[in-house]
Image 1 (cartoon, each protein chain N blue to C red):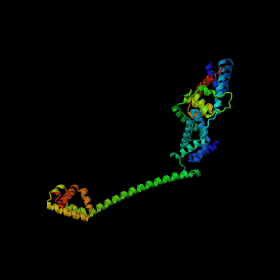
Image 2 (cartoon, rainbow over the protein chains, first blue to last red):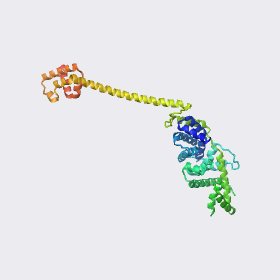
Image 3 (cartoon, rainbow over the protein chains, first blue to last red):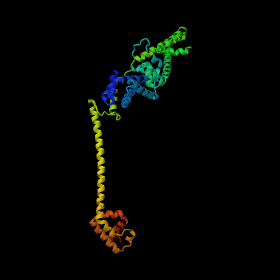
Image 4 (cartoon, one colour):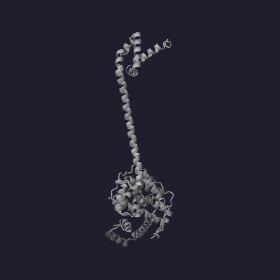
Length: 184
Length: 207
C-alpha cells in the first residue's frame, strides 16, 4: 500500500472512521500476527497479541505522527506487548529440540512449514535466547528489518542491538551444530 | 588481531553487514586460519536456517474472525475518538446511537435537576404560607394569651389554664397551623396543654 494511501487511511482513523480502521486491520493484521507468532512461538498468544495491538492502535492512533513508518510504530506496540507476554509465558517443556530442528531441511530453501512445525522450531531456538535476543533476532533475521529501524522499535542503541544479535546468532548456530552434527 | 575478533566479523559477513575494509581484513585472515574457515561454513548453515524460517510465514487461519473481534472491541470501546464532522455512511448508525444516548442522558439530568429545584421552591412556598398564616392570624394571639415559658405556665391557676385551653381550642379552630407553631416553638407548653386537655376530656381515665 503506498505511503500516501496509508496516511490518508490513518487520518480517517484519527477522525473516528471505523471503516478506515477496518481497512487498516485487513492490511496489517498478517504482519502483526506474523511478528507476534515469531517472538512468542505460540499461536493463541500471537492471535491475542495481534488483536490487543490493534485495539491499542485504535485507542492511541491520535498519538501517531507520520514522522515514523506506520509499521515501525505498530511493531513497537507489538514488541512491547510480546515482551510483557514473554515474562509470563511458560512453554516448550515438552518439545524435543533436536527432533524439531531436524524438520528443517537446510537443502531445501523453498520448503514451507505450517504453524505447528514453526511453533516447535521457533520455540526450540527461542528458549535458548533471552527475551531481548529473541526480539532482536526476530526483527533482524526473520522480519529482515534494518538496524536503524530496530533501534526505533526497541529504543536500544545500535551497539546493544548488534551485540544481542551476535549472541543470539551464536547460540542458534551452536544448536544447529549440535543437531546436524556438522563436521568440517 | 586474534580469532575471537574475526568470529564476530564472520557472522556479519554471512549477513552482508560488513564494510569493504573489514571484508578485506577478514579475507586475509581466512586464508591463514582453518578454524575460522570452518566457522564461516557453520555460519552459512545458520544463514540458510534463518532464511528458511523467514520464508515460512505463519498465518492465522481465523484471520477474518480475529479482525471482526478487533472491530467489535473497537466499537464497544468507550475511549474511541468521536468524529464530530465528516461521518462516513458506515459510521452513521453508530454515531446516531451514541449521540442519541448522550442526548437522553443530558435530558434526564436536566429533568431531575428541574424536579429537584421545583420541589425546593414548593417546600419554600409552603413554609412561607404557613408562617404567613401564623403571623397574620395566630402568633399575636398566642403571644398575648399563652404564657411564654413553662414556669409561668405552671404558676397559672386551674381556672386560668381552663381559659387558656378554651382559647387554645378557639385558636385551633381559626387556624390549624398554630398547632405546628406551638409544637415547634413551645414544645413543653404544647405537651402540657395536650395533657391537661386529655385529663379534662377523659376524667375517669385519670382517676
